[in-house]
Length: 152
Image (cartoon, rainbow, N blue to C red):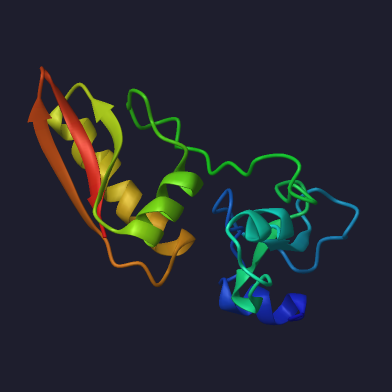
């Protein structure tokens, strides 16, 4: 198991879930303190028929963001300033994109500007969530709205 400082350096001292800065000097009794979180829990690894959880599975998170033993589904929040309709859960959708490739629709927007902002945010955020995944964003008009998609 890697040490907290190594994982913190690798992740740039940013929480992989909320994408906010993590201060390594804050007490471990504070919700904003640093912790190591398994990106894929042992139960999820077993469900995916993997024999073990890989060391690269460990990510930096705030103690308050860390959901512990995986009993609570992890959530990466969408920013409140983006006007999106029916946004998908990011972790599950990015995981599926990583496994299968192809295209995933992430949200619908009412204006092209909103869709462009959502696409730019998605590429930036997913690049930190899944650093090795090469993505392309696309905005398509259809049915009086704009669909925001990512391709792997």
